[in-house]
Image 1 (tube, rainbow, N blue to C red):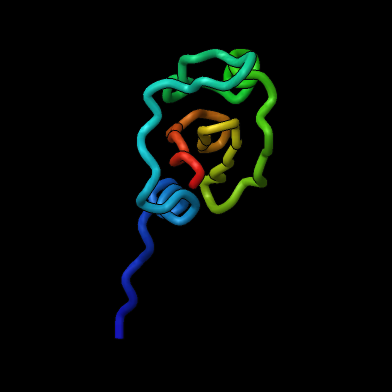
Image 2: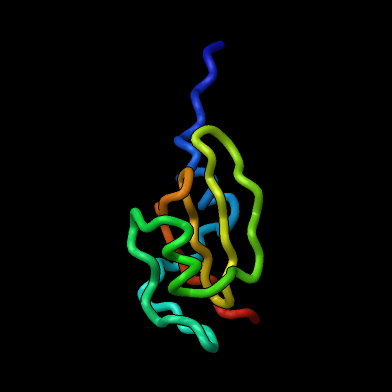
Length: 93
């Protein structure tokens, strides 16, 4: 039996990590941080300069490497060192 290949890393990683409840990020509001999400294609250094250090940095996974940075209320995903997606986390509770 022939197996079906997995979807590209960005798609499956985002779905696995956040699930179907996540909504696209329209604005990012966190105390002392910019309220504009990073633009697709922005470099990691530019995101950190605009938003500050993330609350948590996850190690890169896959090939190409996909990295996740967690901020209060939203998550930014990078492929290599470029933003590919940003999502707002659902409210707790």
